Length: 306
Ligand code: NAP
Image 1 (tube, rainbow, N blue to C red):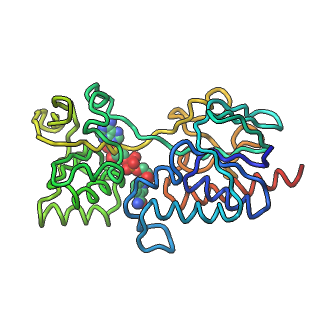
Image 2 (cartoon, protein in one colour):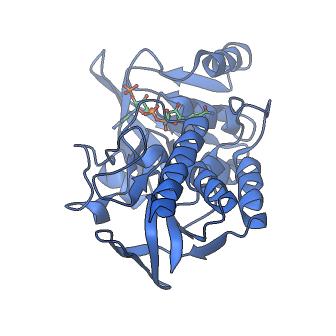
Image 3 (spheres, rainbow, N blue to C red):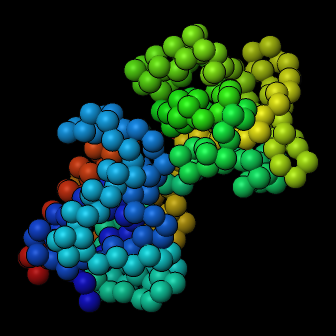
C-alpha cells in the first residue's frame, strides 16, 4: 500500500511526486508512455523560469531525476481501471493492481484528430502528431503543419530546420500562438520562404498511394479548394483529456476535463487532479507544476490528519 499513487508522469505528476516524497510519503508513479508526457514533444521551451531555453525531454529528465533521487517508484503501464471511492483507492494497470490512501490524477491530454477518414488511413504513413518524434523522417521533404496554437507554430519552426518547405495551415486569419514565436515564423516566411503560412483553410482530405502525397485544402473565406503536394502532415490542433475511465465517478466538464476546486480536490475524497487533465485556464508547464505542488500538499495534509 502506497500513501499516494500519481497517474501520469508529466510536469504535474513529477512535481507532485517531489513534494510528496520530500514530505516522506511513499509514492508510486504510473506512466503509460514516456516520462514528461506531452512536454517531451516540445523541442524548445523558453518560458519555464530558470531556463532561458531548454528542450522538453531535457526538462522532463531533470524533473524525473530529482524525483527518483528522493525515492520515486515508477510503473510503466496503462491504467485498466480505478476504484477511487472509499479510504483505500485501487489502481489496476496492465502490470498489476496497486493500492494507496490518495490518488493524484495527472494524465494530461492526448492529441486531437482532424477527424477525416484519410487521416486514420495515413497515420504512421505520413500523418504524425509529434514533430520532435517524427520530424527527422522529413529531411529535405515538404510537410504541412495544421493548427494555430503554440504547438503548431513551434512544430513549424522545428520542422523548418529539417524539411525543405513547411506549410503552416490554420483555419482562421489570427493565430493564437504567442507573439514572440509568431514573429520568428513570420521572419522565416518573409526571408527564406521556408515556411509558408496558409490561413482561413482546413484540410479536407489527405491523398496518396500507401503514403501521404498531397492534401486537399478548403479555403473557408473564398470557398475554393486546392491541392498541395506534401510528404507529411503534422496535426497540432490541441489536445483532449483522456478521462473516459473516470466517467460517472469523478466530476468532469462537457469536454471531459476534471473539475477541481482551488486545492486540486475533485468531488471524491482523497482524489486530486493536476495539470492539463484539469479544467482550467492557462495550460503551461509552470501551471502544471503549480497544480502538482498544490495537489500533493493537500494530499499530504489529508494523510497527516488520518
Ligand atoms: P491550442 O492552443 O488549443 O490550439 C489549437 C489550435 O488548433 C487552434 O489554433 C485551433 O484553432 C486549431 N484547431 C482546433 N481544432 C481544429 C480542427 N478541427 N481543425 C483545424 N484546426 C483546429 O493547442 P496547442 O497549440 O496544442 O497548445 C495547448 C496548450 O499548450 C496551450 O495552452 C499552449 O499555450 C500550450 N503550449 C505551450 C508551449 C510553450 O509555451 N512552449 C508549447 C506548446 C503548447 P482556433 O484558433 O481557430 O481555435
